[in-house]
Image (cartoon, rainbow, N blue to C red):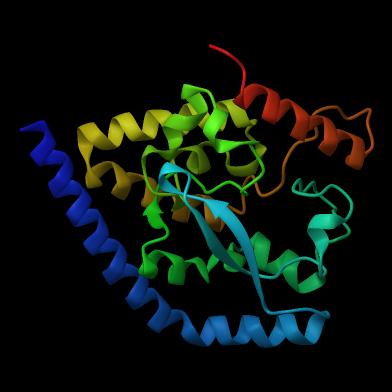
Length: 231
C-alpha cells in the first residue's frame, strides 16, 4: 500500500510539473524576453548561463539560468560562493537575483524532466566532491529529483550552511513520502512569500576576519570534508 502511495504521488508530481512549467513559460514569456534583452544590453556574455549540476542518483544535467554575473565568473573571485556586494554580479543581475528572475529558465529543465518544482536544490557537479564516495547523509538527498525550490530554501535559502541544508533536504524526502504533494504545495506557498520578501539571497561568510576569497576557499574545503566524513 505504501508503494502505491509513493508511485501515485510521483505521477501526480510529474503531471503537475509538466502542466505548471508549460503554463508558466507561456505566461512569463514576455518577462523572460525583457530579461534577455536587458542582460544582453547590460554586459558582455551570453543571456543564458549553463552549468553542470547533479540531480537524482547523481545524474549530470545542464541547468539553465539567466546570466547574472560577468562572463566566466566561476573562475574569478569567490568561485561558487556569492557574498553580498559581490563585484562579479552585474547591475541587471542584482535585480534578477533580488527577485529570483534568474531562475526562470529552469522551467525548461522542469519541463524536460531534469528537475522538479519541489526538491533539493541541484548542486554544482564538483561542489561536494566525488559523488560516488559521498557519505550516506549527503547522498540521501539524491534519492529524488532536484528542485527549483525545496524545504531548505523556505528555511533560509543561501544563508544556511551545507550540513543544515542537507538535513532539511533529507527531512523533505521523509515528509514527502508521508504527505506527498500536499507537502509540496506548502513549500510552494512559502517560497512565494520568501521571494516577495527578498529574503536570504546571499551566503554568509564562514569567518568575517577572512577576505571573501579566503573565506570561500575555506568554506568549499569544509563542505567537501563534511560530505565525505565517515559516519
